Amino acid sequence: MTDTHAPRPGASSRVRLLVTLGVAGLAVAIATWVWLGNAGVAKECPVQPEAAAAIDAAAVGELAALNGTGEGRGYASLSFKDAAGADMSIADFKGKALLVNFWASWCVPCREEMPALDALATKYNSDSFMVLPINLDIGENGLAKAEKFLADNGFANLPLYADNTFAAFDRLKQQAVAVGLPATLVLDEQGCELAVLQGPAEWHTPDGEAVVEALLALAN
Image 1 (spheres, rainbow, N blue to C red):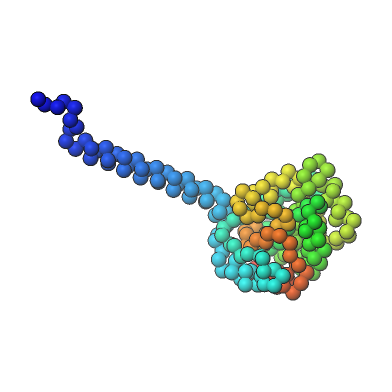
Image 2 (image 1 turned 120 degrees about the vertical axis):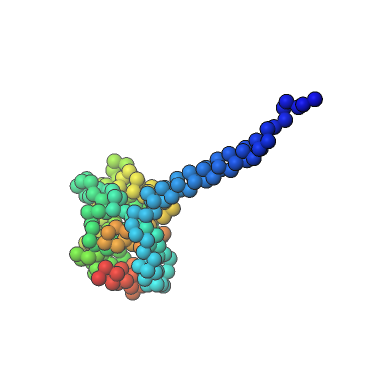
């Protein structure tokens, strides 16, 4: 008696082929999704290993925790406000290499770091470089708290820029760039990341100045 339920010749081969094609298609879809995600985040700027290595080589002693990156992250669109509440972004400083420092008045290491940053700014701020502090005191009174702290301490070269929504720093956390305050980004004149420092540093030292000098040398 003939078994009417027996598989037709070649049926199992066709099933295996379809499964293989399905798995391959899924792999391609996942790879494309990952690539597109990375392209949108990690490739805003050219990858700059040589520039990152130059900053990394200069980061010794008091700045040993500064890590050269240059992986293609860009921050031109990173937004915040000035002291008058006007919208600004890193793009507004195009043409200047930047030391972007994220701080808050409630952050004790941030407060301790500010005098050294002000001294560094006093010495180096120019048409080609700027220490750019971004305050992260959240809430409606955040800007007032930051303004009072800067005024009380008489910092001559640390202007008030702020993001009381915390969105700017959330972006850094989402990209695993920084997790706490203070945090500092070293950016080239196009707003492209060359190095990251998580935590405070003694910027007004020969070691801190060596980092700035290395950054300026790259811009020339």
